[in-house]
Length: 483
View (tube, rainbow, N blue to C red):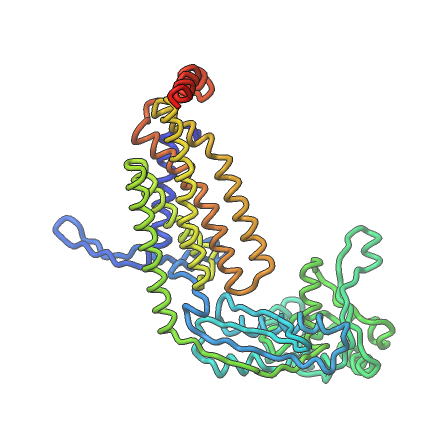
């Protein structure tokens, strides 16, 4: 089906229309006359399908701190009370807790990066789009504290009512057992279940001797009732296991939290609990507010740079390759709109380095066309007819295009894996641009050429090449004699 040029042209047109609708901001359309009465909007959509299971905010691009404005905070973690072997785990826990706190602010795409400078452990927090900086900084700087809470004694516990209790923080009261009463947390597997090949993971709580006594007393008072684990006074518990009758006689072994955990969710919950068991005090070393005005200026300058870059590339293509260059320039426009639409769908958080990666990919998108067009010129100089030269130009330039773009993709992957923050943004936008450029440079340009120049001719490369091989040999011999 993809060999049908009209089908391919229709596919390109559909991609272009969808991309425009995604990229276009909310634009009013008002047409009022005696034939049409239209007052609506196009673009800037918010998608909410399947009862809220599929949500996409296409109203605007997601912008990073340097474009959106917000705050940047550098925290220093005090590891003096943590053993050397537990410090990496403590940093992982502290980073996870801070990320959860930032998400409670209702912001999207925060950047939270742990780092180590000499003997100092630091956490860099960048939060775009935050206006209440004092509340945000206060929330970030708190020390994590895990608390065990029980259901209020006067409330009846049933499975039906438990669903209401779970999301209502007012029904829970402190037991006096906190993360300070834990000496560690492990992910384990139930031996009996392992015998049945279910391999269900559980979370084992390792109490201190004092914590064991305190929790045993709580367990005796709450048999067949839930005891919930709260972190940072969240509006809902991390977990709320029901105390089994076996615990009424007191703790003999380290208790476990069981449930329908996967290994990933069990590991994630253990990290959250460990954050209370290994609290890491933090202090603010640096805080910086980035104004929205700076972000607006950066966006405008970046947009101008992108438009100028597109125009210069287009003029170069037209000057060098005439009508072929016009078709390549049209494909370049489709490439730009498609790439921006993908950025909005994922969504990619746009930063200045990220925009630089996109602008760079515009030039790389042109590189493939230049390789093809130069190959076409060579084929024509060897005596090929134009239609065959175009077909062979695409076929024979593909290996060079593939190798050059694969090396760029590998470089982007290395930057994304080992880099952080702006470096990863640059690598992500560049890699997306490269992938889309392969589509536009080969698929789109080739389709345009077949439609607008050679739409009614189909060629078998092998058969026609054999037909013209003697003429090519004659031209080469003739060139050699003339020298």
